[in-house]
Image (cartoon, rainbow over all chains, first blue to last red; front, side, top):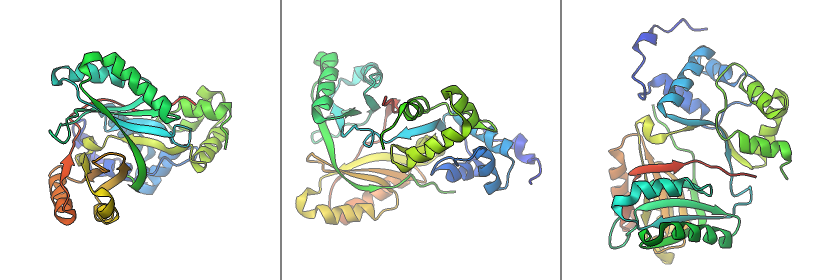
Length: 173
Length: 149
């Protein structure tokens, strides 16, 4: 049991996270406990009230520190074996408009504006496109290219051939 | 394992929106037309079978105050294993993938401060002798997984 935290009044601004938020993040990074009262279990491990953990999680959801709470499918295990990073050279002036349209496609899981490094790297939009086979993935890339028309000044598919390292994001504090 | 109708409903329906309340599995189970105990058991099995890689909160790394970037380099076949080892030795390297391209190694750097990104890149360049292309996210248009099974 822990006393009602006097720190309630000094809660940080929305978006800023403090030591307890970080402790909650660290405690749930591997996943939420699969028990009827998972937030209570996290709270007990941290020596705080379950209500405090839930309030923090709701606040982090609201401020966007937590994107969502739920299941993360393993697309490879689900049969999506041809996952390509597809990079595009698009006119800078249209990147936001086109990025949003591409991101709205259901077979695109990530869509980001990233910097070019000409001449070696002329691409400014990154997408991840998923398919069950390379043919399927390439057909989807073709659909995006057709949608872009002349705005597509070049694109490339980069398939991953090997995972060299995969760990969770570490969190300090 | 072959997912049945309830497994698919869980995978498709629980990619977000898991409730924050005393008995969240009971509440989510009611929405899926099943019981708390059944949902917990199904999630255990889906995680064990690897159909789900994780169940819980998805954090937005940049909003936690750290640095995050995607970086790429060209190692070439001869130096490849040595360079991979040197890159992977940095604890800030969260993921590293071999890709079929002239830029044949792509890794994600996650650091405790934004300033640390440049230091780690400089260290990797010095150790490997490879030029590192830093490709931080400038704007995010979409991130998520909408897999229907």
